[in-house]
Length: 119
Image (tube, rainbow, N blue to C red; front, top):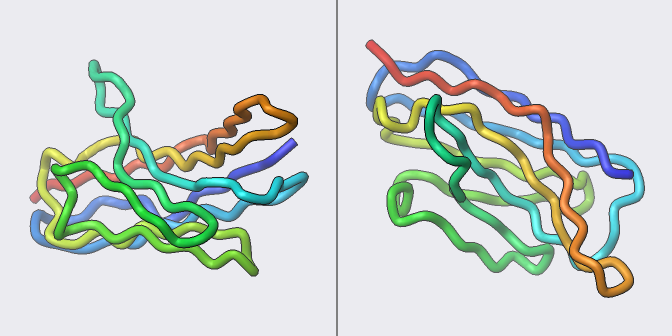
């Protein structure tokens, strides 16, 4: 089992910045990809950004140029630096860790952290 604990969510004004962190613990398998997803009320969960253990990243068009994903493999931690926040970024942000184990795709989720962008 893998446990993911997010932190850093808060209320912030439009144009502000936040940094989310997600620490993984437990039976972490090699070659994993970690990432952030978000879900607003009444909407489906959507990709924000992912990063492989080797550092390859992928992000949604809506956050490119504003959000940066990074990870510290020694700490098993992934970060999401969010700048120029907009009200439409308001969501619960979920951390995800996934990878292949014995040919099976395994995926773990954190409990989520609330980000609210409002004046």
